[in-house]
Image (cartoon, rainbow, N blue to C red; front, side):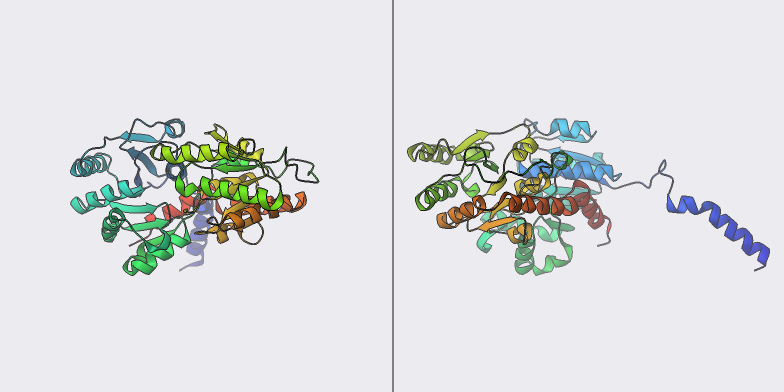
Length: 401
């Protein structure tokens, strides 16, 4: 090659270097055509995470739609509409009717991937994949299997997992369960943690100003966020409060935000009556759903999470984003969440352990509680943002089989 020719090539390369470094975004490379499939967009943790994922994937340039088969629930519809995400409303019917409807939706929208949340949608998605194999399926498990016990329904679902192209869990605990019991799925399995919406980071409590010198039992309180159902462990929390009163002579004020699960109305009423019978009404308030969860958390001194069955709990992630320390039952990925400096662990099945953790937290200095909250906020900022989850999903969906 002559020097003059080499010079021209170098000049051409340098002239186009800005385009190579910063490509023309007016004509982006086409993204994936994705359908996020769930039972409804009612108020719930899985539904919230699916909406976060839809928003994050759309922001990355992918074509995203959400499909539900209980369209009468509209809690997250304004969120999807605000981000111009299409909502496909199907109807609940017999199994093969569900398969036919999903197959038609996939075909009409030229979907390349279906991402299914929860057991029912995953069952229908995998059956549809068996019937027409012109798309791929990512099954997203949202909870944790305790004691390696599966119901008949869960065993049937997992017998179909060989049809899944990708499987995600939101906890290492559940991923380890699948690796242990379904070793052939290892190559398709990934752990992608839950994420938190930007509104929680905007409501950080780390800059609340002067730090109080002592815990004030009348002014300070702990927040619980979640529906009222047996595995959320309201009964265990009541036992822990009674144990705390007996052992330490004091009571901590707790406010529980969350709807009473319709399927567990008898359980809810039993626990309400226990609160009355044990004269705990001024110390534990069941306030129902709150419209502004970030502000609710921000006004508390910490999060209490007594659940006995979780994957990677939304409530803890959200509290961390706000900058709150947490007291968490030692299950699933709780030790990963808490680390060495973000809160306290307890045995959610033990009233004595719950009481001890409450007493330990109350006796922390305010500076120590603030330090815990700051560490929690830092962890959430790094690992629990919406875009982090979306990028990880995009990576596994785009990678070769």
